[in-house]
Length: 127
Image 1 (cartoon, rainbow, N blue to C red):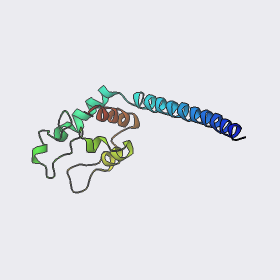
Image 2: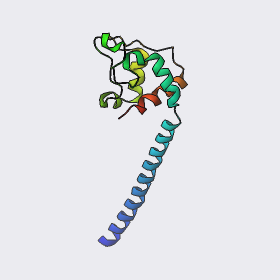
Image 3: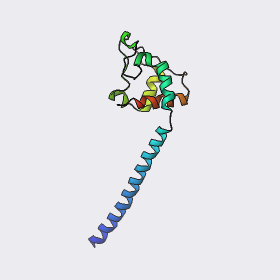
Image 4: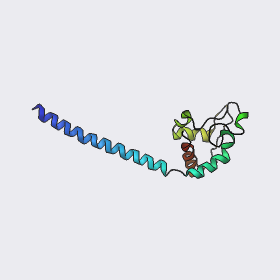
């Protein structure tokens, strides 16, 4: 009697486990596709270099030509601290700016596709 119970539970567990694995895999694939198709890194790089590079540096390390004059210094966008932020957190800082710093907000200056391009470039800075 216990054997039948275990078999039923095991079979159900295998089916539920397989569904979970397939669902997780599909979720990861969709997330990857959304990011991969979400922005053009080269367009983002162009915008970044024109609008952000003077302070954050051409490679995003906070060492732009104006960065040495700023207190506090610009963020290192390639750092683990910055790269660990969610897309929404990065967008919030970029759009609203950061009080107490020279970081001005870009709200109204970026279209959604430009934001996606910029985000794709920023994510490409991750070491």
